[in-house]
Image (tube, rainbow over all chains, first blue to last red; front, side):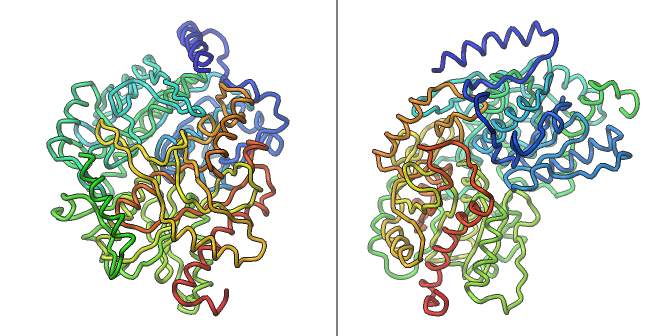
Length: 320
Length: 320
């Protein structure tokens, strides 16, 4: 079973490096095209109820993040940045029929929320990837813009992930399929990470770096916090763990990057993870910055991705 | 490390059976009480900014569910059922400052959303349990009311969980703490499950049963769906897996019950899981019922829990 996906993964890797022509989104499911209808339940969309190619065929950039409010703010920001305000298009939540996720479309940019944690983003990604496939989208870049805890770096720093690693510092995502565990690679697109890092250097007062990102299944015990409802380890054990993570090249911790990297890689989507850090976990566990500082920090990944999209669209001379 | 929690777990177990007097919520974290302030970041509440005992001290029933809209609907329903409408209290989202979760309080009932998946509910539970502890709540019952996929039972059936099991049909939750894996029991309160089952029999046209509930980390590959963006197994393998699950006593599949059972058990909260099934996974993978049928199904767990709360409060003669 696992070998099917691993094999296609290898061929995609060389695709990625030698790419010419249109790169479509791959679904890796032999059953899908024989289905009479595909209901994307958690997005409240479907192949019979919606004309997906007409609605989404021109999408080139997908930006995802945990918080619905933040992804709406990003959509409004992109509308301004791409000078699409004059179209007086209302920013409407395309998934308004469900409260599981929200989705906004601004020209070629899709902004979607994914909730918190691997299972939540994984449901969204399955349905998003099918959506891009049904809509016959090509050459799509997908970027997660999120928040995270930093390790040994100043709060407010933006970490561009080269590789997502698990709690054991390994670059892998363990997917349970039926009752088997299948290990998938979590490598991200290195060229895209470099490109984003270079653009970040053009923005004044924008601390940024490339590093490994650790993805955990929980915020408290799994990230070594001493302030959860449960805590069975000492402060020393916590600090030892975080210092070992730092030595392994990890610069921030969040809760979605491994499955995001693994799924996008398998489906031929060029992917990046760009997260701002809200605290330095070597210093503290609680997020206690004033709200306005937190707000400004959370805009940093948006600022970088906006610059990236405008460069890609050849709009960089107008406002950058 | 793990032994600390296992040991207290055992003593709690006998507590649970021989309980007399007030049963407080236990946090199992020696660091917590020495903290000057505790910011419950994802609930937008804190010990310095809010008078938690005044706000929450009288809470006796906590109901949690994935969808924010559904948990608001449940709060409105309970307001009616408990005849608290005349107080003209606005149903306000107590966590309005954040979009991670929503929370409503109706007299002794707290209704909170938890998003989808183990990591998402786990963050909420850590902060909820600390909230109940800071507010000095006692004798609290917590119930997850959710949706699920059934196995071999009619859609619309309500499953009251006796034991939550993982993808390997084991009654355990594997919690990663730093880089160790700690196994926790997922047994739920049997007496509470029986009580709920008995009440369910009093409601006309209310198909219900007690069974095991399987909790997975994802909705597609992890639950043997043939309609995800990725699918590497055959229809036969899927059916074989689900039939083995049925033989093991599993009657429904969802994505939060193991960590919910494990954490509530460790913290001395009497807990139950009551989920309606939206489809029979032996028959299909897609949720394609008309919206009004889905709505009615989703009200079933609410109906049962409302009856339970009214009985506990001695209000069962008024409206039941």
